[in-house]
Length: 258
Image (spheres, helix red, strand yellow):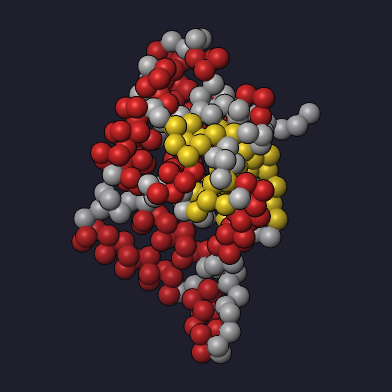
Protein backbone atom coordinates (compact mmCIF):
# COMPACT_ATOMS: atom_id res chain seq x y z
CA UNK A 1 0.00 0.00 0.00
CA UNK A 2 1.40 3.36 -1.04
CA UNK A 3 2.05 5.92 1.65
CA UNK A 4 -0.21 8.97 1.76
CA UNK A 5 2.91 11.16 1.85
CA UNK A 6 6.02 10.06 -0.01
CA UNK A 7 9.48 10.82 1.38
CA UNK A 8 12.73 10.32 -0.56
CA UNK A 9 16.22 11.72 0.13
CA UNK A 10 18.78 12.12 -2.65
CA UNK A 11 21.81 14.40 -2.98
CA UNK A 12 20.96 16.24 0.22
CA UNK A 13 17.38 16.95 -0.91
CA UNK A 14 14.28 15.50 0.74
CA UNK A 15 11.36 15.28 -1.69
CA UNK A 16 7.99 15.17 0.06
CA UNK A 17 5.08 14.19 -2.19
CA UNK A 18 1.40 14.40 -1.36
CA UNK A 19 0.07 11.05 -2.57
CA UNK A 20 -3.69 11.21 -2.55
CA UNK A 21 -4.28 11.85 -6.27
CA UNK A 22 -7.79 10.42 -6.34
CA UNK A 23 -8.80 13.22 -3.92
CA UNK A 24 -6.62 15.92 -5.57
CA UNK A 25 -4.30 15.63 -2.55
CA UNK A 26 -6.94 17.12 -0.28
CA UNK A 27 -5.60 17.83 3.19
CA UNK A 28 -7.28 15.23 5.34
CA UNK A 29 -6.25 14.94 8.99
CA UNK A 30 -4.30 11.80 8.03
CA UNK A 31 -2.36 13.60 5.28
CA UNK A 32 -1.62 16.57 7.53
CA UNK A 33 -0.28 14.23 10.23
CA UNK A 34 1.90 12.33 7.75
CA UNK A 35 3.20 15.59 6.27
CA UNK A 36 4.05 16.83 9.77
CA UNK A 37 6.05 13.65 10.39
CA UNK A 38 7.90 14.02 7.08
CA UNK A 39 8.85 17.61 7.88
CA UNK A 40 10.09 16.61 11.33
CA UNK A 41 12.16 13.84 9.75
CA UNK A 42 13.71 16.32 7.29
CA UNK A 43 14.41 18.79 10.09
CA UNK A 44 16.19 16.18 12.21
CA UNK A 45 18.28 14.63 9.42
CA UNK A 46 21.68 16.36 9.03
CA UNK A 47 22.01 14.82 5.57
CA UNK A 48 18.93 16.75 4.40
CA UNK A 49 19.91 20.29 3.49
CA UNK A 50 16.93 21.37 1.39
CA UNK A 51 13.38 20.16 0.76
CA UNK A 52 11.02 19.90 -2.22
CA UNK A 53 7.26 19.67 -1.69
CA UNK A 54 5.05 18.54 -4.55
CA UNK A 55 1.91 16.57 -5.35
CA UNK A 56 1.04 13.48 -7.35
CA UNK A 57 -1.51 13.46 -10.14
CA UNK A 58 -3.24 16.63 -11.30
CA UNK A 59 -2.92 18.65 -8.10
CA UNK A 60 -0.34 20.04 -5.73
CA UNK A 61 -3.20 20.15 -3.23
CA UNK A 62 -6.81 21.17 -3.73
CA UNK A 63 -6.96 22.26 -0.08
CA UNK A 64 -9.18 21.01 2.71
CA UNK A 65 -11.07 17.76 2.40
CA UNK A 66 -14.59 19.12 1.88
CA UNK A 67 -16.12 15.67 2.12
CA UNK A 68 -15.12 15.48 5.78
CA UNK A 69 -16.11 19.03 6.72
CA UNK A 70 -19.76 18.07 7.28
CA UNK A 71 -18.57 16.05 10.28
CA UNK A 72 -16.92 19.06 11.92
CA UNK A 73 -18.53 20.97 14.74
CA UNK A 74 -16.89 24.01 16.32
CA UNK A 75 -14.63 21.96 18.58
CA UNK A 76 -13.55 19.46 15.90
CA UNK A 77 -12.98 22.30 13.45
CA UNK A 78 -10.77 24.09 15.95
CA UNK A 79 -8.74 20.93 16.58
CA UNK A 80 -8.27 20.34 12.84
CA UNK A 81 -6.96 23.88 12.39
CA UNK A 82 -4.71 23.60 15.43
CA UNK A 83 -3.15 20.48 13.87
CA UNK A 84 -2.75 22.39 10.62
CA UNK A 85 -1.19 25.34 12.43
CA UNK A 86 1.45 23.12 14.02
CA UNK A 87 2.25 21.92 10.52
CA UNK A 88 2.52 25.46 9.17
CA UNK A 89 4.80 26.58 11.97
CA UNK A 90 7.04 23.56 11.34
CA UNK A 91 7.12 24.23 7.58
CA UNK A 92 7.67 27.98 7.86
CA UNK A 93 10.24 27.59 10.62
CA UNK A 94 12.24 24.76 9.03
CA UNK A 95 15.81 26.07 8.99
CA UNK A 96 16.44 24.54 5.57
CA UNK A 97 15.33 26.00 2.22
CA UNK A 98 11.97 24.65 1.01
CA UNK A 99 10.93 24.66 -2.66
CA UNK A 100 7.28 24.16 -3.59
CA UNK A 101 7.02 22.48 -6.99
CA UNK A 102 3.41 23.19 -7.94
CA UNK A 103 2.42 20.59 -10.50
CA UNK A 104 -1.31 21.32 -10.81
CA UNK A 105 -4.12 22.79 -8.75
CA UNK A 106 -3.01 24.65 -5.62
CA UNK A 107 -6.27 25.90 -4.21
CA UNK A 108 -7.52 26.89 -0.78
CA UNK A 109 -5.21 25.58 1.91
CA UNK A 110 -3.03 24.03 -0.81
CA UNK A 111 -2.31 27.51 -2.15
CA UNK A 112 -1.38 28.67 1.33
CA UNK A 113 0.91 25.70 1.96
CA UNK A 114 2.84 26.72 -1.17
CA UNK A 115 3.05 30.30 0.14
CA UNK A 116 4.58 29.01 3.38
CA UNK A 117 7.53 27.62 1.42
CA UNK A 118 10.61 29.69 0.61
CA UNK A 119 10.43 29.46 -3.17
CA UNK A 120 7.52 28.48 -5.43
CA UNK A 121 8.01 27.22 -8.96
CA UNK A 122 5.14 26.03 -11.09
CA UNK A 123 4.46 23.94 -14.13
CA UNK A 124 2.70 25.81 -16.92
CA UNK A 125 -0.53 23.92 -16.20
CA UNK A 126 -0.63 24.90 -12.52
CA UNK A 127 -3.62 26.84 -11.19
CA UNK A 128 -3.95 28.84 -7.98
CA UNK A 129 -7.05 30.00 -6.13
CA UNK A 130 -8.12 31.35 -2.75
CA UNK A 131 -11.45 29.59 -3.09
CA UNK A 132 -12.64 29.80 0.54
CA UNK A 133 -15.36 32.38 -0.07
CA UNK A 134 -17.00 30.05 -2.59
CA UNK A 135 -17.74 27.58 0.21
CA UNK A 136 -18.56 30.17 2.87
CA UNK A 137 -15.26 30.05 4.75
CA UNK A 138 -12.47 32.46 5.59
CA UNK A 139 -8.94 31.82 4.25
CA UNK A 140 -7.07 29.45 6.56
CA UNK A 141 -3.68 27.70 6.73
CA UNK A 142 -2.05 31.10 7.27
CA UNK A 143 -3.13 32.60 3.96
CA UNK A 144 -4.12 35.93 5.49
CA UNK A 145 -0.56 36.21 6.83
CA UNK A 146 1.38 34.99 3.80
CA UNK A 147 -0.50 36.33 0.77
CA UNK A 148 -0.56 40.07 1.62
CA UNK A 149 3.18 39.93 2.25
CA UNK A 150 3.72 38.61 -1.27
CA UNK A 151 1.18 40.52 -3.38
CA UNK A 152 0.16 43.48 -1.20
CA UNK A 153 -3.05 43.99 0.74
CA UNK A 154 -5.30 45.14 -2.14
CA UNK A 155 -4.46 42.22 -4.42
CA UNK A 156 -4.73 39.75 -1.53
CA UNK A 157 -8.22 41.03 -0.76
CA UNK A 158 -9.25 40.79 -4.42
CA UNK A 159 -8.03 37.19 -4.72
CA UNK A 160 -9.61 36.17 -1.42
CA UNK A 161 -12.93 37.98 -1.86
CA UNK A 162 -13.44 36.74 -5.43
CA UNK A 163 -12.03 33.25 -5.03
CA UNK A 164 -11.03 33.36 -8.69
CA UNK A 165 -8.60 30.87 -10.18
CA UNK A 166 -5.40 32.28 -11.65
CA UNK A 167 -2.90 30.68 -14.01
CA UNK A 168 0.75 30.00 -13.32
CA UNK A 169 1.66 32.98 -15.52
CA UNK A 170 -0.63 35.28 -13.53
CA UNK A 171 0.82 33.95 -10.29
CA UNK A 172 4.28 34.71 -11.64
CA UNK A 173 3.23 38.25 -12.57
CA UNK A 174 1.91 38.78 -9.01
CA UNK A 175 5.18 37.57 -7.48
CA UNK A 176 3.67 34.38 -6.03
CA UNK A 177 5.67 32.11 -8.32
CA UNK A 178 9.40 32.53 -8.86
CA UNK A 179 9.36 30.89 -12.28
CA UNK A 180 7.12 28.87 -14.59
CA UNK A 181 8.50 25.80 -16.34
CA UNK A 182 7.28 23.41 -19.00
CA UNK A 183 5.09 20.86 -17.27
CA UNK A 184 7.40 17.92 -17.97
CA UNK A 185 10.45 19.87 -16.74
CA UNK A 186 9.04 20.94 -13.38
CA UNK A 187 10.63 18.33 -11.14
CA UNK A 188 13.96 18.46 -12.96
CA UNK A 189 14.05 22.22 -12.38
CA UNK A 190 12.90 21.87 -8.76
CA UNK A 191 15.68 19.37 -8.11
CA UNK A 192 18.27 21.64 -9.71
CA UNK A 193 17.22 24.53 -7.48
CA UNK A 194 17.02 22.38 -4.36
CA UNK A 195 20.40 20.74 -4.98
CA UNK A 196 21.96 24.16 -5.49
CA UNK A 197 20.51 25.29 -2.16
CA UNK A 198 21.62 22.06 -0.48
CA UNK A 199 25.18 22.82 -1.59
CA UNK A 200 25.06 26.17 0.19
CA UNK A 201 26.19 27.13 3.71
CA UNK A 202 23.39 25.46 5.65
CA UNK A 203 23.83 27.21 8.99
CA UNK A 204 24.01 30.66 7.40
CA UNK A 205 21.00 30.01 5.17
CA UNK A 206 18.99 28.71 8.13
CA UNK A 207 19.75 31.77 10.25
CA UNK A 208 19.01 34.14 7.37
CA UNK A 209 15.67 32.39 6.79
CA UNK A 210 14.71 32.71 10.46
CA UNK A 211 15.36 36.46 10.40
CA UNK A 212 13.77 37.04 7.00
CA UNK A 213 10.60 35.26 8.12
CA UNK A 214 10.23 37.79 10.95
CA UNK A 215 11.49 40.88 9.13
CA UNK A 216 7.99 42.40 8.80
CA UNK A 217 7.45 42.20 12.54
CA UNK A 218 10.87 43.49 13.66
CA UNK A 219 11.92 47.10 14.02
CA UNK A 220 15.17 48.03 12.29
CA UNK A 221 16.90 48.07 15.66
CA UNK A 222 15.60 44.60 16.52
CA UNK A 223 16.56 43.20 13.13
CA UNK A 224 20.08 44.63 13.36
CA UNK A 225 20.46 43.06 16.80
CA UNK A 226 19.45 39.64 15.46
CA UNK A 227 21.69 40.17 12.43
CA UNK A 228 24.71 40.80 14.68
CA UNK A 229 24.01 37.76 16.84
CA UNK A 230 23.53 35.46 13.82
CA UNK A 231 26.55 36.82 11.97
CA UNK A 232 28.67 36.23 15.04
CA UNK A 233 27.69 32.57 14.88
CA UNK A 234 28.25 32.46 11.11
CA UNK A 235 31.79 33.84 11.52
CA UNK A 236 32.61 30.80 13.67
CA UNK A 237 31.37 28.15 11.22
CA UNK A 238 33.50 25.81 9.15
CA UNK A 239 31.51 26.90 6.10
CA UNK A 240 32.66 30.51 6.54
CA UNK A 241 36.26 29.37 6.80
CA UNK A 242 35.83 27.23 3.68
CA UNK A 243 34.18 30.11 1.83
CA UNK A 244 37.09 32.44 2.57
CA UNK A 245 39.64 29.82 1.51
CA UNK A 246 37.75 29.17 -1.71
CA UNK A 247 37.55 32.90 -2.44
CA UNK A 248 41.32 33.36 -2.22
CA UNK A 249 42.02 30.09 -4.02
CA UNK A 250 39.64 31.13 -6.82
CA UNK A 251 37.53 27.96 -6.69
CA UNK A 252 33.98 26.96 -5.83
CA UNK A 253 33.47 26.42 -2.07
CA UNK A 254 32.63 22.95 -0.77
CA UNK A 255 30.20 23.65 2.08
CA UNK A 256 29.27 20.97 4.59
CA UNK A 257 26.54 22.77 6.55
CA UNK A 258 28.78 23.05 9.61
